[in-house]
Structure formats: structure tokens, C-alpha cells
Image 1 (cartoon, rainbow, N blue to C red):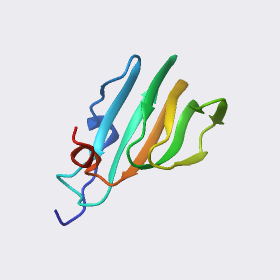
Image 2 (cartoon, rainbow, N blue to C red; image 1 turned 90 degrees about the vertical axis):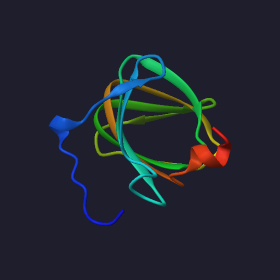
Image 3 (cartoon, one colour; image 1 turned 120 degrees about the horizontal axis):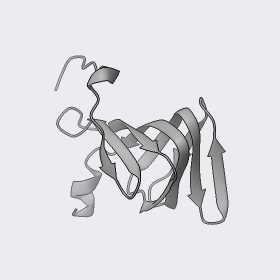
Image 4 (spheres, one colour; image 1 turned 45 degrees about the vertical axis):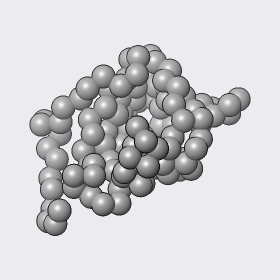
Length: 113
């Protein structure tokens, strides 16, 4: 796809993600050949996942936590995390909203999911 796409906050649609999380996927393979992006919310939850892509996470509001083994990255608004592919982790938060970007966008197809 070519051209600019604008995503209005008022038009954003969140869906359930794990137990207690929500996600609004914005950029996917239908728009970009290289990267994906979206907004996620985490409030009083702990969601286990192993990222199958490189991920950049920017905390927008609340307190966001990323647990990797015994290490906890506690993030406030404006904090940024880089997460390399194949990292087992837990997404957690208290009223947290984050923006994320990931690459490659076709990670599901590459992983056979």
C-alpha cells in the first residue's frame, strides 16, 4: 500500500488480548510489507508470551511492566523498551497504555501460525 493512513484515537477498536489485556492492531501486513504497530492496554493482568519478532514498546500512560525471567522493567509514560525476537516475557500494567511497533510484520506466517 502507498500513501498515508491516519488512525483517529476516537475510532480505535480494542479487542481482548490474553486475560485482562486489550489490543488495537493498527499496521499489519495488509498495509506494510515490513512492520506492524498498534496500541495495547494492560491493567491488573500478567500475560505470558514469547515475542517472535523484534518489538519496540513506548509507554503512553499508567505503569507498564515487562517481566523477563527475574528482571522487571518498570516503565512510566515516555519510557521506551526494545525487545529482541525470541524473548519469553510477561506483559503487565496498572492502567497502562502502550504503543508498540514490531518487525517483521509477517511473523505469524513465518512461524506457521
